[in-house]
Image (tube, rainbow, N blue to C red; front, side, top):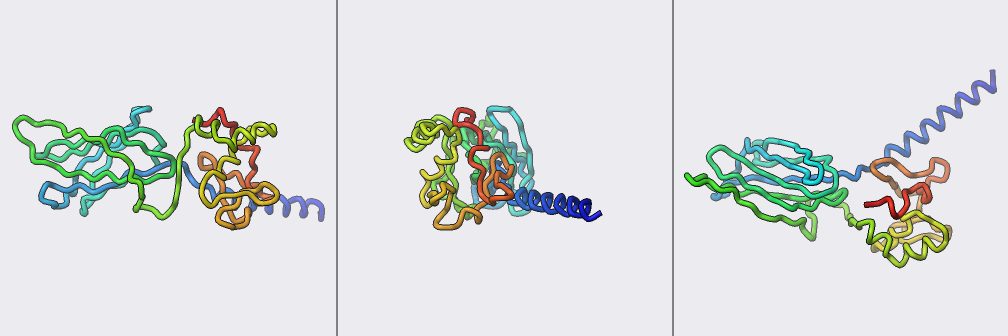
Length: 220
C-alpha cells in the first residue's frame, strides 16, 4: 500500500513539474497591429483589414474598433501583405512586410477618398528599428547565419549539433562554468527557453536541454 502511495505521489510530482515547465513556454508567433485614419487624421472604425502570409497564402481578416485600431496576433514568421479597405475610400496596401519570430510590427493606414479612377496605393513598410509596441528585446537570425557564426563552427568541432551556443552572440548572453546559458548575470535556472512554443527546460536540472534542440541545418 505504501509503495503504491509513493508511486502515486511521485507521478503527481512529476506531472506538476512538467506542467510548470510548460507554463514558461513562449510562442514564436508575431503580431501586426496599427491604426487607420483618413487624410484629416480622423479615426476610422469599421475598416476591413486583411493580413496575408505571402508564403502560405493564409489570410486573416479583422475590423478596426471604435478607436480605429486593429491587432492580428499569432502570425507565423514570414513575409506579409496588409490591405485596408473602407467604403468610399481607396484601398491601401502594404507589401513585403517582414515579420520575424516574436516581433510586433505597426502598420498604420491613411485612407484617401476614392475618385472615379480608383487606384490601389501600394507601399513597402519595414519593421521599425526600435520597437515601441512591446518591452522585450528580440533578434532573428537565419539558418545560414547560424551555421556561419564562428561560435557555431567551434561548437560543431566538439561534436555538438545544437545551435544553443549561438545565443551567446547576443549582447548580455553568456555561459557559466558548466556551459549553461546565462542572461545579464542571471542564474541559468531563472531562464525560460522554448522552441516553437514548447518548453525545453529540464524538470530535474531546471536548465535548457541544449542537445535536444534541432540541428543547425534544420533551422530555416
